[in-house]
Amino acid sequence: MNSYGFLIKKSGDTLLTQIKVYKGTNVPEIDQDQKLLLAYPEDLQEYADVDRIALKEVDRFYFGFPGRFNVVKKHDTTFVPLEVIEEKTFHLYVRTQKETQPGSFTSIPFGNGMSYTMAYDIEVKTLYLSKENSEMVHIIGDKKEKRKQLASILKNDLDPKKLKKLKTSNYDIIKLVKKLNSI
Figure 1 (cartoon, one colour):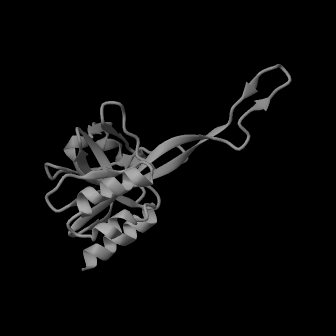
Figure 2 (tube, helix red, strand yellow):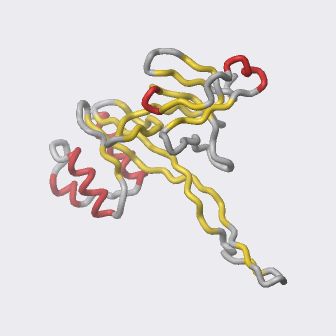
Figure 3 (cartoon, one colour):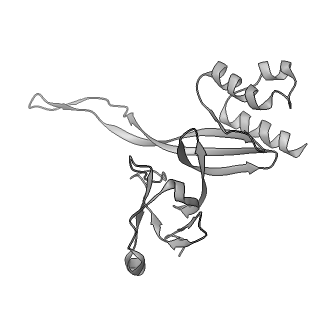
Protein backbone atom coordinates (compact mmCIF):
# COMPACT_ATOMS: atom_id res chain seq x y z
CA MET A 1 0.00 0.00 0.00
CA ASN A 2 2.82 2.44 0.82
CA SER A 3 4.14 2.31 -2.75
CA TYR A 4 0.72 3.40 -4.05
CA GLY A 5 0.15 6.48 -1.95
CA PHE A 6 -2.98 8.55 -1.39
CA LEU A 7 -4.24 12.09 -1.44
CA ILE A 8 -6.72 13.91 0.74
CA LYS A 9 -8.91 16.47 -0.97
CA LYS A 10 -9.99 19.71 0.72
CA SER A 11 -13.48 18.21 0.81
CA GLY A 12 -12.15 15.46 3.09
CA ASP A 13 -12.36 12.68 0.49
CA THR A 14 -9.37 10.36 0.22
CA LEU A 15 -8.17 8.88 -3.09
CA LEU A 16 -6.02 5.75 -3.16
CA THR A 17 -3.68 6.45 -6.03
CA GLN A 18 -0.12 6.58 -7.18
CA ILE A 19 1.25 10.11 -7.72
CA LYS A 20 3.22 10.24 -10.97
CA VAL A 21 6.79 11.49 -10.60
CA TYR A 22 9.28 12.74 -13.16
CA LYS A 23 11.62 9.98 -14.30
CA GLY A 24 14.80 9.81 -12.24
CA THR A 25 13.46 12.11 -9.50
CA ASN A 26 11.01 12.04 -6.63
CA VAL A 27 9.22 15.18 -7.87
CA PRO A 28 5.46 14.92 -8.48
CA GLU A 29 4.34 15.63 -12.05
CA ILE A 30 2.13 18.71 -12.45
CA ASP A 31 0.75 19.72 -15.83
CA GLN A 32 0.47 23.25 -17.27
CA ASP A 33 -3.08 23.54 -15.85
CA GLN A 34 -1.78 23.10 -12.27
CA LYS A 35 -3.12 19.53 -12.04
CA LEU A 36 -1.37 16.71 -10.23
CA LEU A 37 -1.01 13.61 -12.44
CA LEU A 38 -2.25 10.32 -11.00
CA ALA A 39 -1.73 6.68 -11.95
CA TYR A 40 -3.37 3.48 -10.81
CA PRO A 41 -1.44 0.22 -10.56
CA GLU A 42 -3.25 -2.96 -11.49
CA ASP A 43 -4.53 -3.48 -7.93
CA LEU A 44 -6.26 -0.08 -7.95
CA GLN A 45 -7.71 0.00 -11.48
CA GLU A 46 -11.25 0.12 -10.07
CA TYR A 47 -10.47 3.65 -8.81
CA ALA A 48 -9.00 4.87 -12.11
CA ASP A 49 -11.84 7.26 -13.00
CA VAL A 50 -9.64 10.29 -12.19
CA ASP A 51 -6.21 10.60 -13.85
CA ARG A 52 -5.41 14.15 -12.68
CA ILE A 53 -6.66 16.52 -10.03
CA ALA A 54 -6.34 20.30 -9.65
CA LEU A 55 -3.85 21.28 -6.93
CA LYS A 56 -6.39 23.77 -5.55
CA GLU A 57 -8.62 20.79 -4.61
CA VAL A 58 -5.85 18.91 -2.76
CA ASP A 59 -5.12 19.38 0.93
CA ARG A 60 -2.22 16.90 1.26
CA PHE A 61 -0.79 13.80 -0.37
CA TYR A 62 1.59 10.94 0.32
CA PHE A 63 3.79 9.57 -2.45
CA GLY A 64 7.14 8.33 -3.62
CA PHE A 65 9.94 6.22 -2.33
CA PRO A 66 10.92 6.89 0.36
CA GLY A 67 7.45 8.11 1.28
CA ARG A 68 6.88 11.86 1.48
CA PHE A 69 3.98 13.88 2.80
CA ASN A 70 3.18 17.08 0.94
CA VAL A 71 0.67 19.81 1.68
CA VAL A 72 -0.70 22.11 -0.99
CA LYS A 73 -0.54 25.84 -0.22
CA LYS A 74 -1.42 28.91 -2.23
CA HIS A 75 1.50 31.21 -3.08
CA ASP A 76 0.68 34.36 -5.03
CA THR A 77 -1.84 33.08 -7.59
CA THR A 78 -0.75 29.44 -7.84
CA PHE A 79 -0.98 26.37 -5.66
CA VAL A 80 2.27 24.58 -4.86
CA PRO A 81 3.00 21.18 -3.29
CA LEU A 82 5.30 21.59 -0.28
CA GLU A 83 6.96 19.23 2.18
CA VAL A 84 6.46 20.38 5.77
CA ILE A 85 9.65 21.01 7.73
CA GLU A 86 8.11 22.89 10.66
CA GLU A 87 4.64 24.28 11.44
CA LYS A 88 4.79 26.19 14.71
CA THR A 89 5.11 29.98 15.14
CA PHE A 90 6.97 29.99 11.84
CA HIS A 91 5.83 27.66 9.08
CA LEU A 92 8.71 26.35 7.00
CA TYR A 93 8.26 24.27 3.86
CA VAL A 94 10.49 22.98 1.10
CA ARG A 95 9.46 22.64 -2.53
CA THR A 96 11.21 20.12 -4.70
CA GLN A 97 11.23 20.79 -8.43
CA LYS A 98 12.78 19.10 -11.44
CA GLU A 99 15.51 20.86 -13.38
CA THR A 100 17.48 19.59 -16.34
CA GLN A 101 21.23 20.00 -16.02
CA PRO A 102 23.84 19.45 -18.71
CA GLY A 103 26.02 16.40 -18.15
CA SER A 104 29.75 16.46 -17.54
CA PHE A 105 30.29 15.65 -21.23
CA THR A 106 28.16 18.33 -22.83
CA SER A 107 28.84 17.32 -26.40
CA ILE A 108 29.66 13.93 -27.85
CA PRO A 109 30.74 14.01 -31.52
CA PHE A 110 29.85 11.11 -33.77
CA GLY A 111 31.50 10.04 -37.04
CA ASN A 112 28.56 11.28 -39.13
CA GLY A 113 29.24 14.91 -38.14
CA MET A 114 26.41 15.07 -35.62
CA SER A 115 26.88 15.62 -31.91
CA TYR A 116 24.57 15.03 -28.99
CA THR A 117 24.31 16.82 -25.68
CA MET A 118 23.88 14.74 -22.57
CA ALA A 119 21.60 16.04 -19.83
CA TYR A 120 20.00 14.67 -16.71
CA ASP A 121 17.22 15.64 -14.32
CA ILE A 122 17.99 16.79 -10.79
CA GLU A 123 15.88 17.81 -7.83
CA VAL A 124 16.15 21.47 -6.80
CA LYS A 125 14.90 22.42 -3.34
CA THR A 126 13.70 25.90 -2.39
CA LEU A 127 12.24 27.11 0.90
CA TYR A 128 8.95 28.82 1.69
CA LEU A 129 8.44 30.60 5.01
CA SER A 130 5.48 32.24 6.72
CA LYS A 131 4.52 33.37 10.17
CA GLU A 132 1.16 32.50 11.68
CA ASN A 133 -1.59 34.29 9.74
CA SER A 134 0.79 36.00 7.28
CA GLU A 135 1.61 35.56 3.62
CA MET A 136 4.07 32.90 2.59
CA VAL A 137 7.41 34.08 1.17
CA HIS A 138 9.44 32.10 -1.36
CA ILE A 139 13.10 32.26 -0.25
CA ILE A 140 14.97 32.41 -3.55
CA GLY A 141 17.70 34.40 -5.23
CA ASP A 142 21.18 35.52 -4.22
CA LYS A 143 22.27 36.16 -0.61
CA LYS A 144 21.05 39.76 -0.63
CA GLU A 145 17.60 38.87 -1.98
CA LYS A 146 17.22 35.97 0.49
CA ARG A 147 18.15 38.23 3.42
CA LYS A 148 15.56 40.78 2.29
CA GLN A 149 12.87 38.07 2.03
CA LEU A 150 13.77 36.67 5.45
CA ALA A 151 13.81 40.17 6.98
CA SER A 152 10.24 40.78 5.79
CA ILE A 153 9.08 37.96 8.08
CA LEU A 154 11.67 37.99 10.85
CA LYS A 155 12.03 41.77 11.41
CA ASN A 156 10.06 41.72 14.71
CA ASP A 157 11.62 38.48 15.95
CA LEU A 158 15.32 38.98 15.23
CA ASP A 159 17.79 41.75 16.06
CA PRO A 160 18.47 44.01 13.01
CA LYS A 161 22.21 43.36 13.32
CA LYS A 162 21.60 39.61 13.15
CA LEU A 163 19.30 40.09 10.15
CA LYS A 164 22.15 41.70 8.20
CA LYS A 165 24.49 38.79 9.00
CA LEU A 166 22.08 35.95 8.26
CA LYS A 167 23.57 32.99 6.46
CA THR A 168 21.29 32.09 3.57
CA SER A 169 21.95 28.44 2.76
CA ASN A 170 18.87 26.23 3.10
CA TYR A 171 20.58 24.39 5.97
CA ASP A 172 21.23 27.63 7.91
CA ILE A 173 17.71 28.94 7.31
CA ILE A 174 16.18 25.67 8.53
CA LYS A 175 18.42 25.73 11.62
CA LEU A 176 17.44 29.37 12.36
CA VAL A 177 13.69 28.75 11.99
CA LYS A 178 13.83 25.66 14.21
CA LYS A 179 15.69 27.71 16.84
CA LEU A 180 13.12 30.54 16.64
CA ASN A 181 10.26 28.04 16.91
CA SER A 182 11.77 26.50 20.04
CA ILE A 183 11.83 29.85 21.91
